[in-house]
Image (cartoon, rainbow, N blue to C red; front, side, top):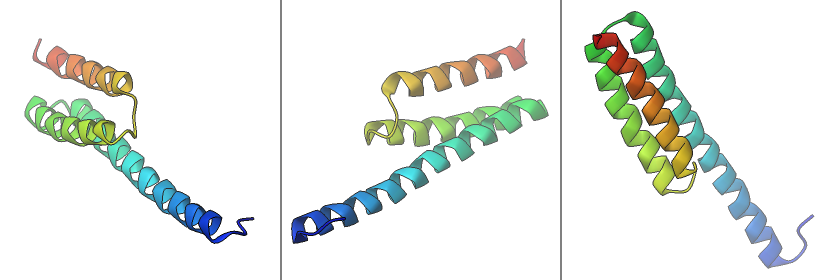
Length: 88
């Protein structure tokens, strides 16, 4: 357990960061689910709109270091491929 004042403060900061990071990851997952739901519904317009929102949230989380840039790119690429396939 943290005994020094510095260690207690670091423990508080770590807990706050953990909660914030978890909230950011959860928000990104929610937006990705919305895109997948829109794709499953078959409406390309709503899927594209949901995709644009998800990309914004995903890029923001990536800039803040919550996700590796390659993981974000992989998600965006796969979702975009699914949306493009709807038009064909």
